[in-house]
Length: 109
Image 1 (cartoon, helix red, strand yellow):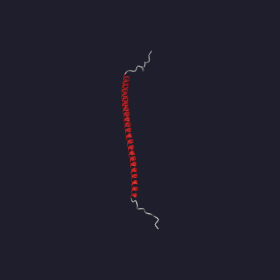
Image 2: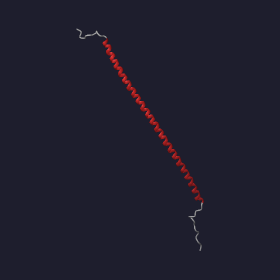
Image 3: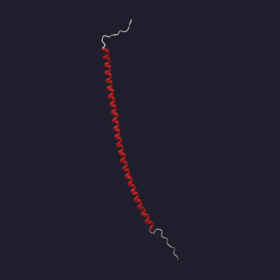
């Protein structure tokens, strides 16, 4: 006849099994949720650390640039001063009579 036997003697048994699976799934979802929160916190922490590192690196580069700019300005001012002194020396040399090129007139004896 019928090869399957249905047992209706304890109807709450099926509910308990589904309840156990539900609790197990809840525990698993909680684990996944905690892992996801931990992972997102880790990503946020890494991004904040990289942002702080980038900011300090930018400040360091700006300080180096400012120091080089000051050094360049001082070198440019020194070059301008030397050029002005050299121009004064050239003017003095052109105004003074040159004694190193004295021509002696031939003697008429």
